[in-house]
Image (cartoon, rainbow, N blue to C red; front, side):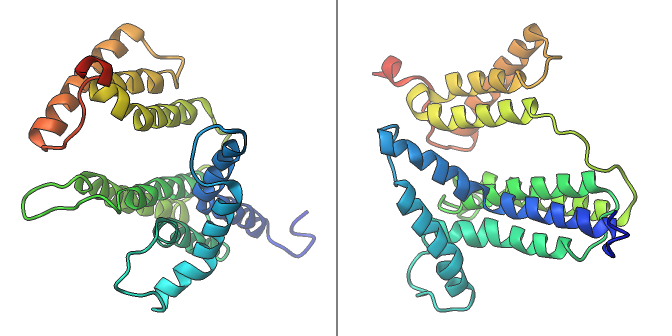
Length: 252
């Protein structure tokens, strides 16, 4: 059908993939906008929907271009919304534009690489306000940035594989695994301060394990306890990061 209309089928698929990448580039802004709707009915705190919409629109259309072309005051730090546009959204916008003109030979590898790239870029943005290395001393943002850079490099290699070698097309997406993994990450982020590292890390691991029906719970509990013990030794003692270990009500 696409050939009879004078448009190659590959171009049609590329357009669809590019549109999905554009949505992915705006995913954090869309998520915050949806989250902010709860403030209208008193669920949670933070910026309202109109504030979120105006802040991100101005960052994407004015703040980030001003930073790129030098109209931003160099003495002032970039606001988080502008950094999100610069570090996360703009690179994915560029990838979406490039996708329109490329021949994707393995859509599954290419899209998988772009999704990993988005995760790496988001990690770089999320850790942008954390302290970096001072000499040989690790800061709170050193490990997230290091893993973010490595993940971006790996994702570029995977995406290039999708461009250069023949492979499988896009298959049906299984939501269960990513859903529970994201739920475990959100739980850890929300629970680390009130519940401490031990409880939040172990519970997060169990939540992530529910992402597959093949989970064997005896082995999962043993592995989760071992990883929690490793985190309890690594972060506060080896890396020297000031992380709460136990729930506040037990410490107090």
